[in-house]
Length: 637
Image (cartoon, rainbow, N blue to C red):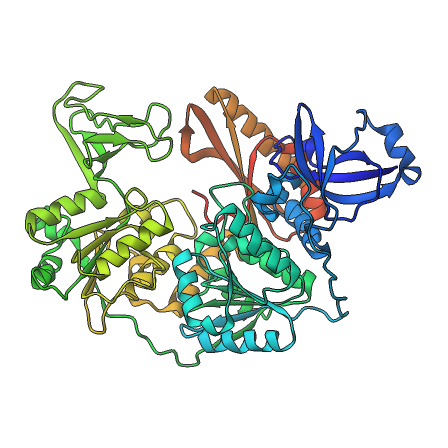
């Protein structure tokens, strides 16, 4: 008889349910998949340890529970190889997440759901040389295709596998077309579970040498990985912020390269501030243009305060209207209008008592949508109500709406140019990559002259060049309580600028043209942005000058949530001080959306000067085991 240590492949949020022990009649390899009883359920689990019972008698004696036997074996051959099991272990520790969360992420859904045996081929993993992995390489160039091809050719010549990761499915299709000669295998979330599993199995067997994918591909079970290329490494979609576990693809790629003795290459025309800082400090090798050719259009900043003085109350400046007039009726001319919000108006405001309609379940403003019908919607919990003619607080009829969303801009455009056809591209109108592609194809085909879009429009290489790009409004972004906002706005403008025809106008409308971030975004001077950001972040000890953990406490009622957050924050301060670890604990403070679905949220921000995982985790895990933890958050909102 043998004892197996296993990790559940379904997400079990309970802290002490991460590593389970079971009997087995036969020894199994690390990485094998078995079915085990957990409570009243039977689930699949990943084997991470196997030993004869005689070697672990003390474990049996000390167990607080009766150790059960496994139910069956799904696959005796390892579903994950040694590098992947080591990577899973690292990710769970680095991101302070349950092992089960990452087991669920590493393994294909098709395999996780299997209840009957599914034999996998035996795969001989090549012995690793003792050489150390090379330093990461940062390529700061707009034109990276030739350098990528050189790296791919070198890997293939050595018989090794290559992974190219991109942040968006639209970019994936673009790279597949550019590199058709490599016959790349695709690993992306738009594949069916069975097709994803079949592709995953080819990667595991080594029959797929060149693999292209979105961030999920970083967890594929490579037989002999030689190179990882992360394109557009600055893209925020590389961070899993909306679904646990909250990992960052670049961090995982660096660790995978280290474990696999592979090379990791990060590519971007405008890298993230932390990545470029590491290159400047010598932690990364760097290739960049000594004298980069600037293809960005001239960006004109329009002060919308002057438009109000001139009694122009539309979302469009006079300059924008004049250019739209030249496009109206011209079949071959097109425009992109960028709006930072979806919906019609941002909020309804009572001019007598200043009351703003908020969601009863959240503290978020209700956004007005007039299409397909007139309603107020909470974008955070989905609450919907019809707009009232009178103020719900003082019964005044003087209700005014503020802030232009995509639908409002479309309505105003139709008033000015009734014959101008427009499409709205946002997360309401195009929820999936396939729907987004169809809309872009329709726009390119001439079915609309204007594309009104949110950030959904970014990183879509299939969009044909247009005759006008106008940022209708992004002032709401400027005042987000987020240290990354300058970098984010710069990247938005950079992405939009790539859609301009040579010589086409680019207009940025704003009520705060004097804001430094607006000026930097319009200049599109990366060196100036980097200098500004590094200076600001160093003063406030934000990344790359610290390691941040955002801890969110959720509870109801509000007093209970606040008390729990205050206790956690104080315990963290005391523990770091006792351990003599340099740390700054900020908060607790109400979260950016402080109330959601009738629960109250408080954020604690921990800034650490250095990362010592063992010491950090020994302090943080016991104190915050019932909270949401985001290590290296993209921002603080």
